[in-house]
Length: 195
Image (cartoon, rainbow, N blue to C red; front, side):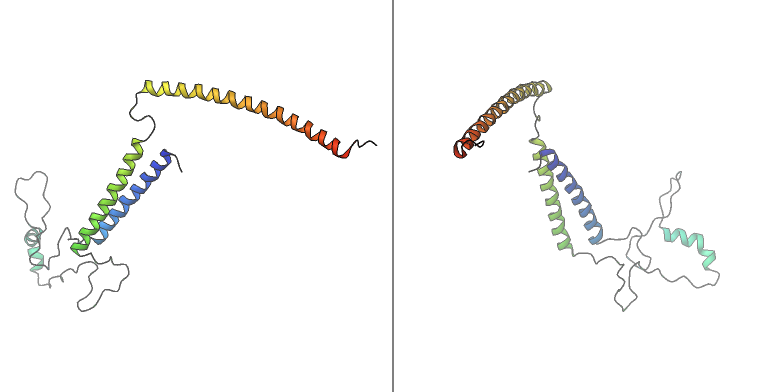
């Protein structure tokens, strides 16, 4: 099992990935309404004309501003431009076949259910991160307490190192003794080899 810091880094990476995936889902499958609604929809809210910085007059719809400014141009006898078509919309009577078009938005119920699921996943991941932070060593202790604990651990480490060195010396003595016993047994079984 990985140490707590590695687990915490993994959870943070997963949380960032979840944020990215959530934003991707929300922007892809949301029932978007365009910021500037098309002019061929009669009940759409009108777009506002650009407002100069130092004006005190209320904003007017862009269509009225264009009509006032371009009245002389359109009165010249040229036909009005065709109404703009929504981007990605198929011509009337045909189905969109372009694979580059975004997918159809989810139904409101499906979208709301998936939003709740994504939010729940984010909350669970955040709670995992909070738990990992809470079990980090040193959380909730002062600096002086941590330094005292480090000194205790250093003393314990020195004692364990002394014990290890003593066991290593004892192991060497046992190895020499075992070699002498094996040598004696070898001579006893086979006798003196010099004969």
